[in-house]
Each structure stands twice: as C-alpha cells, then as structure tokens.
Image 1 (cartoon, rainbow, N blue to C red):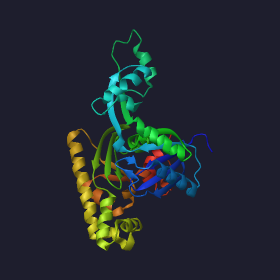
Image 2: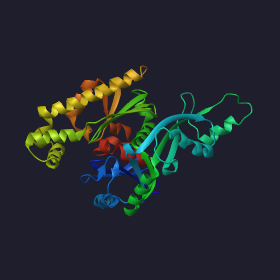
Image 3: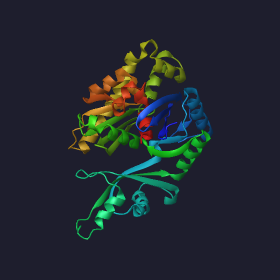
Image 4: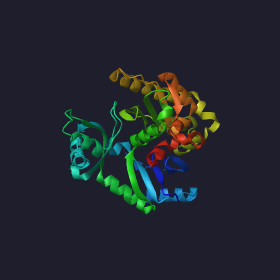
Length: 347
C-alpha cells in the first residue's frame, strides 16, 4: 500500500461513496446504498451499522486502506471567513474559537476548530508563522492581517466519527466539510479551470437537497441550499407507477421505461431549475460585481440529462461536469458522484 494512500469517505443520505486516492490520483472508487434513516439530519444514527457498511463495501470492492478522510455533513459544521490581526499559530489557535461566539451554543470546549490561510488578492499564501515573523520587523509600520477560512465542529461528532472508522479498521486522519473538498480540487485544477473564469459555482444535486457553492478563485463566498433533490423525483415516479418509493428509486436509477423523459418528471426538473434560478438571482443581487457564468455539476442528479438541460436553460449558464475538477476525471466511472470523497482525500 502506497504511503500517501488514503480513503476518502462521503456519507450521503442515499449513498455511501468511497474513493481511494494516492496524492491526487484516484486508484479505486466504490459506492453502496445507504439503509433507510441511517443518516438523519446530518448525523449517523448507528455507528455500528455505518462501520459495518463501510467494511462490507471495502471488502466487496477489494479496497485496502488504513487511513481515512471523512466529509463532514454540512448540517454539523460552522464555516466562516474571517480576517484577524497577524499572530502566531499558538495565538491563532487560542483566539479562533471566539470568532464563533455568535454561532455555537453550549461551551466552547465542546467544539473543535481549524482554519486555512487564504491568500490575499495581491499576495501569495503563506503559513501563519512565516507571515507573523514579518510583522515583528521594526521597519514594518503597516499593520497586517490574516485572511482565514475557519471551521468549527462538535467534538462529539469528531469522536463518534473516529470511533466509527476505528470499528471499520480505519484511522481518521482528516475530517472537513464538503467546501474543503471543492477548494482542494479547485486549487489542483486551477490552471485549467481559470481559462473559463475566476468565479466558480459547484452544484451538488443531492438526494434530499440541492446545494450551490460559490467560489471566487479558491475562496468560498456563499452556499445556497434548495430544499429539493432527487427524493422529490422519486415521489413523482412512485405516483406515476403506483409503487412504493423504494421501488421507484430503482426505476429512477435504471431509467425504467424511459421514465426520466416523462412529462411529470420534466415538471419536477423545471421546479428544481426555477428554485435554482431564484437562488442565483439573489446571489447576483447581493454581489453586483459578480460575473459568475460557469457551473460544475456533481452528485447523483448530474447523471440525469433532462434535469441538466432544464437547469442550463433556466439559468443561462455554461454547464460543466464535475469530472473536470478531478485529475483524469473523464476516466473515472461515475466520477461526478465521487467528487467530495476524492477532494477530501487529496493531499
């Protein structure tokens, strides 16, 4: 097993996705259907069941790994862009939690915090310690600051995640929200992506919800959540055929009797597209200098071509597959579904 090999894990409401990655090269991927209600409101309801599913999926797909990187659910983390006075790493670790006073409930000691130093527009990214040394020079009269993306998560969530992975034979090396996965991939492929624009929208067409992540370069600007996903399409198909939603889900996946082209399904696509248009219009109103015109599609819904057509027509944007964000992504089967797992594992 390669020294840098790590297993990226993305636990969704509908599917578990695994990606074995060596540096930025994807070695293997695997997915499994999630048992009903195993993931609820961003929390795993049974770590024993979840660890068993991870172990079984690794065994069935022949994946061998000892280290793991986990995508944390959006509902369970706080993310904030902050600018702080220049300070050493030790000072930053002490002061960072206070930036979340208006967000978290309970005791600060019940949360863990981390950060990434973001480059200023006119400066290259530097570690906090290196930049702090610069401010200690007596010749430097201008006060400098640190531009950070800060993340906070419940300590209990991290501990539960580590225990779950331990039971699956894995050690938790890294845990971060989906935004961090996307930032890593944007940085990896920036030379290629920048031919389009310096603004990126990554659209995650998930099962319970659809999320729009906006970036300026590798800087996260905003996230918009649409409370409509593939589950609404499953319900439409269930009504069409008079079957239970579990069976309707298999119809969706196999495009049973070309059901994804049915008029009722197209109405569902249009409803999702309209909600996305409203969210995009609000973003552009709030950011009048934005010239955002490109969108990268990922998640299970990225495979549904009529849905993509409805979104592209309603938003009048250039659509790309999320495989463009991944090294050699065109050669990875169903790459769009594994983007978060791949990004979290890249080093």
